[in-house]
Length: 179
Image (tube, rainbow, N blue to C red; front, side, top):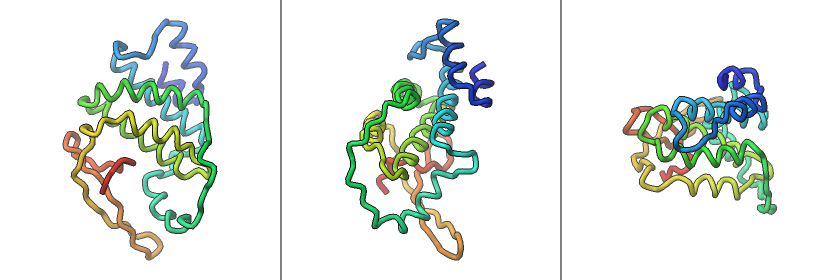
C-alpha cells in the first residue's frame, strides 16, 4: 500500500493507512515497512520540492556552484515546519541504527543526499534543518576514503569528490564528505 501511494503521490492516504492499521514508525517496526515508509518520504520530499526523476541533485550542484559563488544570502534564520521534513528527521534516527543493512544504508544515503543538496540549492536554505540532519550521522559511520572522478559537460571539466562505501562497493556522494 505504501508503495502504491508513493507512486501515485498520495502521501496523506499513506499516512492514514498507517494510522488506520495502528502502524507506528519506530525502531521495532518491521524493516520492510520502515524501508517502504522511507522511500515514501523520499518521494514526498521530491514532490514537495518540485524535483523530477530527471533532477540529478548530486551532479548539478557542482556544475553550477561556480556561477553562484558570488551569491550571499544573509537570512540564515529560515525555519520550516514541513511535515515531510519532520518525518524524515524521525526516520533518519531510526535508519542510523540499521545502517549495517544494505537496504537501510541505501535509503539513509539517498535521504541525506536529497535533503541536504536540495536545501543548499535554495535561495533561502534552511540551515537549521541541514545542521540537524548532519548531526544525526555519527562520525564513525562515515567513510574517510575519498576518490575523485572527472565529469565533462559542455567542454568544461569538473572534478567531483565521492566516497566509496566499503559495504556496497558503489559510489555515493555524501554531503558530509570531508574530501
